[in-house]
Image (cartoon, rainbow, N blue to C red; front, side):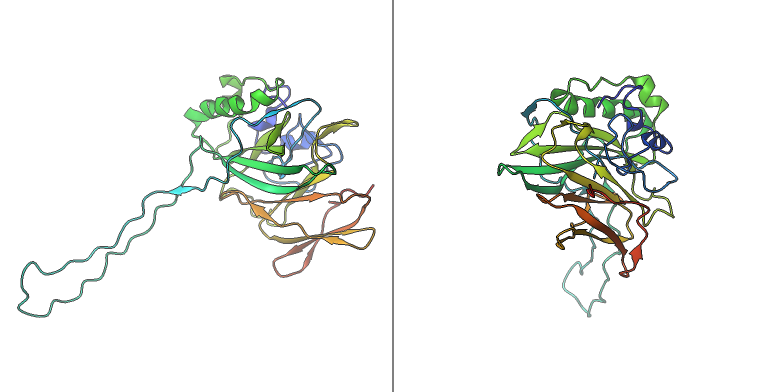
Length: 309
């Protein structure tokens, strides 16, 4: 995937450009890295891009792998500013009467600091390949940068991605300024196998905290990861990534042999969306995908069915 205007526009475009992705939406997926077999599920007020999970979606396409530099870190928690402390007083000398108790001064902890140059990385799914190697799907969220530093952030992301994919073009300031979206975080999703980052990844945008549309609580977006076309994949298996609205509490996949998979729903940093990853078990086909809200009620899937063929 590239970050130029022709191939990676929705890295910076918020609402609307996922429409061009026609068949897939990973929270939603970038145009250039649209997933084979993915589906656009719901219209939203803004584009929710990603990766997969990948919700946003990872598109990993043929080629070599390279050592992970830097290695994927464990989740970097958001660092809150130093909270205030209550204070009290005592008497200045020997008391001549009982001192009245002094209540601590009420304080409010500062909100978490969101550093646009310190992405939060979380493993949203993992498993084992038929050869016994461990694969992991990572999602990195780069908090939205102020407009005056958006290009600096774009360069930082390019510097991280480009060692693994020569097709990732260096962004231009004009392009970043044109498509700047203050309501979206930047997301980067990628696979590793035995600690080695695969050569192609995906980047896009996802709603920043408090910016998810009021009707998107049951949003469902997803698609097949790591494939750009027939035979053009380096994914460690047939793996689907989902991005889900905050009102989706459970995903249930029933396979043709009667077995059931219920993937964990993973939150990355303070993103309003949650991610789920489902890998096809060997020799099985999905018969039914079901989605439930917090009250256990089934949510219409709008055609969000994968791995059925």
